[in-house]
Amino acid sequence: MKTIPVEAYFAVSTALFVLGLLGMIVRRNLVTVLMSLELALNAVNVAFVGADYHMGLVEGQIFALFIIALAAAEAAVGLGIIIAIFRYRLVDSTDEITDMRG
Amino acid sequence: MVRLLIFTFFSLWAIVSAIGVITFTNPIYVILWLLSALIAIAGIFFTAGAELVGALQLLIYAVAIAVFYVFVLTAVPWEKAVKKSSHYRTEGVLSFPLILLLYLEIAVVFLLGVTASPEGQLRGLIEKFGNTEVVGSILFSKYFFAFEVVSLVLLIGMIGAVLIGRKENQTYEDDTR
Image (cartoon, rainbow over the protein chains, first blue to last red):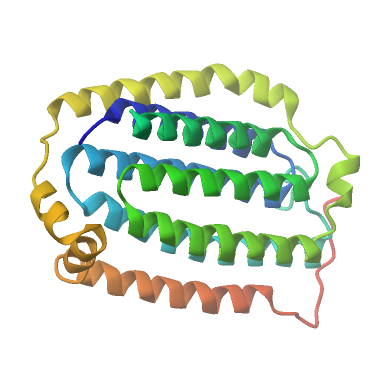
């Protein structure tokens, strides 16, 4: 039954997570930073489901569902904050928000 | 063997889409690449036998959240992001060795964990009842409190998003420059 090694799932998950992290660092636009964050969360989901498939459990899938729900909440709050920042400051780039710089 | 081929197809698709997400400048193209990556990750879930998570990935991520991002892009003028340089290039190049180090660390920890992990506790049950039934029965018995807490978090997130995103009469002056 098991034909896909669990290391393959972890390799894909690590690659996607690192790409998402790199996107969070190099992106300048706030909305695309959040999109890279979604990519990193999905990479964690891939690791959970792959480990489940290896061990024959379902706990990882349950936590993947929790991560999907929390990502929806995070997207709602984060995009609300981005809209508020744009409305009051008229900026949409991460290096223009300098109000708390010491 | 066919399963491995399908898995390889979806993984390559996901990684190519992820590279597209972090390299393209236009946010509309970035959203399309993200949508492609989410669909490919749903395919990866299906190859692992997680039908419920894959279906919810397609329903919640690829439909609801992607549409949400498109709505926000209509509210934020993203044309400025296309004109300016859209990436921190020097920071990206400088942080790349650190990211590579993190990658290697995660890989080592994963491989150590794989050799130590048990195998196949619920597999007979899953083959008997099917994936969705087993996930549902454990979700609503063992993790019921966590499920309720997640629903509370969603409610608080919704109220917070409405409160943050509403229009105020007063606008604040930017006095930093």
